[in-house]
Length: 308
Ligand code: NDP
Image 1 (cartoon, rainbow, N blue to C red):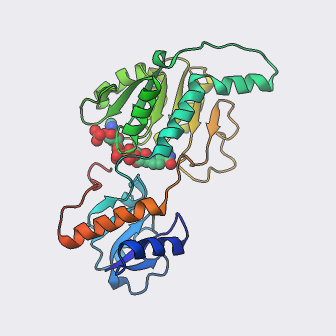
Image 2: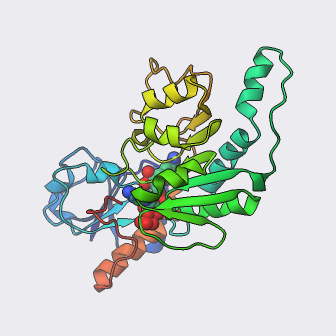
Image 3: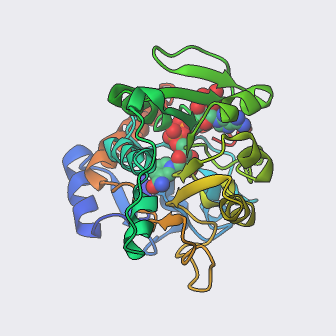
């Protein structure tokens, strides 16, 4: 079997070494060195040019190297084969760390103290204990659930918003659009970890910000297009929201002319919440290929209809 790989993370030689150790017989082709397109039966990719996957006539499986399948699914000519997620099914500790870092910054008013320091101004803002601070995590998936648990373990009062109702120990759960207003109304710091789908695009907009408590903050670790940037800046400028941290943007790198860069209440991190390791992905890619070859059911599938 030939596997096409986009070696976006890590050097090609490292990927080859890892695959050789796991599946010595696997013929690994590293993009753009595809060879004969008819040989390719599996593609483990971040993204490829639109329509490219369709050009492999014997493609049987796609492995998404990214947690979000939004870019893959946006290809109108995406072949109708299973799409498997290669990431760790138990989440990513760096994502949990990033969420904790940014939530703590807003919880302890660090952006406001930094701004006051620029003015040589001695200010004092309310000091809440973690248990007095209500955090809302949008999306309790592979990455979102461990994030919510890490925040709860720190002592925060954590709630999550999901699509299908269910219970999680220590995390109040809200489900569906009808419970979104109540979820937002109790969430002083909202951490977004939704996948980007037609239902979630632009979900953090004027209406959502208005439902959040005054003085709230938003941490976007999902995808840039979840946030309507003009609405966010308006909510910050009106002093309804106190701050926002954005790690992801509709266009990356964020264009130099973007007003987000210089907004005094916005912290920008350039999509650096975590580091993806080839060594973590290769065993999962090989497991998926082995399951496929043995005719066993594939795990961690993307549901195209839901969009995640
Ligand atoms: P999953 O697909 O595992 O989980 C998605 C979660 O979102 C589920 O809990 C799901 O609810 C919920 N959800 C989806 N659609 C809706 C909706 N319409 N209404 C309410 N809830 C909804 O995703 P992950 O946790 O693995 O990752 C989430 C996203 O985080 C990724 O898609 C990616 O965009 C982003 N990400 C960003 C990174 C970065 O570097 N900044 C790194 C990794 C991921 P339910 O459980 O009910 O289905």
